[in-house]
Length: 351
Image 1: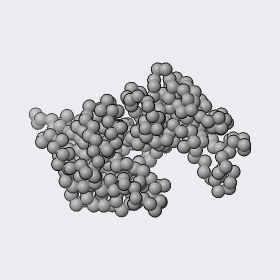
Image 2: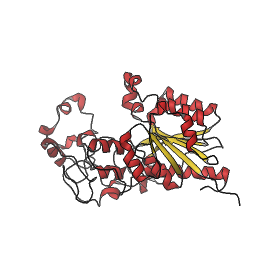
Image 3: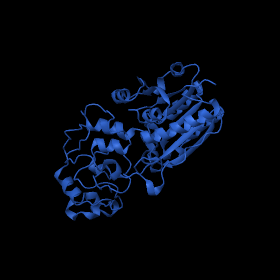
Image 4: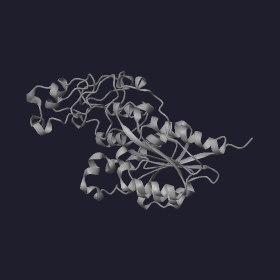
């Protein structure tokens, strides 16, 4: 019987390991994560059987990445370049070229060009497809004879309980590869209730005695009054007029209703951003408790397992950023299964 081939993956822009965790759960061996944010090292290595390499991808030698792989392995390279430069808000901003992250996808392409892995996976915000940088990235793949498929997907279709669309790209030197088909139908979407209903009730400013990550930010008195008058999936229009911020009293601000809201138990959550613990930064009010999401709730809605260790909570902003920037592990697992199935088609058994 033909010997099973090893699959090895390197995760660029790995953060705290959401994508790595999902890939490993699918059976792909992630041999290293690379990121320039050293604050991610603890959570990445604590929860994943892979070393964290603290490096700036712009200055990281591709030869070092080549040497990470075993000689006889099927080589996979994955990455989600920081997506803020490609968000709809930033893309409209004329100062985008001043953002040092704007060309990270170009460096991802450079590494591909110099390492030529068997399979590539790239995940990012949907707005990136409109950019010249994305077109240049595709040209790198085309020049190197990769078969490419990409699509903007709605992540509740893949088991992530939040209203979020993402671009997924897969490329292979071996043959045609396709974006995975949805795993969930609309009537089977995982909801906020499914994910956080059974967590211990806590108040604003309180932390659970059983879980230091189940911690909610304190609220100013005015925001406590606002959330008490907020309805699930409602808006600031549910409040007494005296509670309205100045901007909502002007006609120009009355169309903006995506902040200061409560989530609905029986729907998916809003997109979990890096500011999800702030009540005023989005529709991040708990469905029934008078507070914003706790750090643990945000992590669970991002599909991190309940025992994922983010380290000591010294700074809510840092951990919230780690969680909000992550690829949802469940999405990583679906991508991993697709890659593994694809490689099995060409190499036979994999391990």
